[in-house]
Length: 263
Image 1 (cartoon, rainbow, N blue to C red):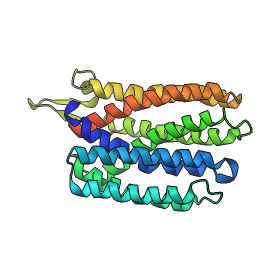
Image 2 (image 1 turned 60 degrees about the vertical axis):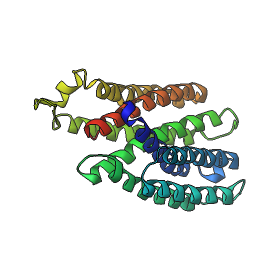
Image 3 (image 1 turned 45 degrees about the vertical axis):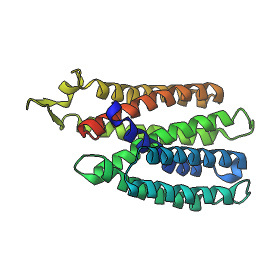
Image 4 (image 1 turned 135 degrees about the vertical axis):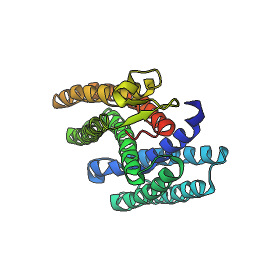
């Protein structure tokens, strides 16, 4: 994993920063204070800045460096414009994120050694959306400690979307598992089920368990606690889900970079 850790971190940080602001659609400005927007836009900018610094320090391709820098500059400009502003346009924020998605798509083509660029881009965006979604849900859940009258429906919507994204990835994994064949250095072909049971497939097993099984199970309990309006309990479970999905996503990306398996 060490051989790919730099590329994985850059890819994860930038993808997270780009997709994270899309979730602000589930918390309209009229239902939440401007401080929430300040924090989340600032968080996205900080994560994007980390991706830029890491890209520069590793001497990555100039096209990737300039792409990240361009998106970050645009994002910071919008963040400055809307800082403590009562009138905030999610359309403008999402347009900036959409520009970032285009850059992220080109980055996917540049640094991931797999065939089928379209599928690779879609799955990568799905992966980053899940990671961004669970972090957004956790921060929103924590916001209920500060704002007592915050509607419970906001957190329920974000949680439902997150479950939907996890469900899509689960279905995709189930479709791909029977069809993918791994050929090792000795020319021996193995199905993905056999590969997971081997030492080489350890990271894929970890990815599936922590990236899908654990968070889907946790979100059953999150849904039940939200039905009871127990936001503190739901937020605690979301903390665990964040850690689980981070581990799972890291392993998914290692399998993607190492073996070109798009799951």
